[in-house]
Length: 138
Image 1 (cartoon, one colour):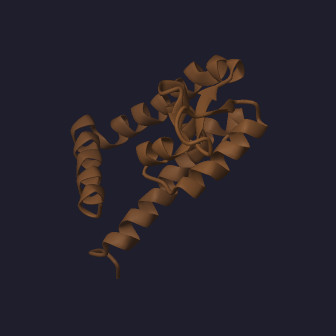
Image 2 (cartoon, one colour; image 1 turned 45 degrees about the vertical axis):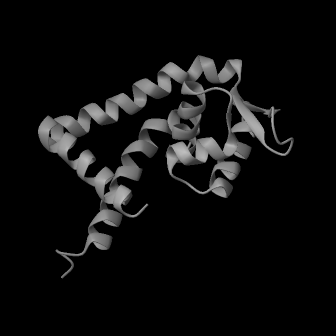
């Protein structure tokens, strides 16, 4: 019935991918959005909250809520920014640095599984196509 519906097919795919990454990050008591945000903080320490939101293509308020959880778990700390005092820079804690490689490995394992399932070319083409569609909406 919805074979040609972009909305239906992308949301169905998103739900399935959410399950894959939820399983990967469950051992760390992190949801996929929290884990990807933490991985971004680890890769880019000192970014402003709004910059992290831009990197992940999410609303600033969504990033703030996820950062609140990460702070409560002891994975990030907020520090005053150099410019506007209301904006905070985000840094990983020592605890985050410890689990960072494991988060990367867990995510990599999902990517490896998907590459095997789809084939490397289809996987790469799918990611590129979805990125292109997403960019067209920006």
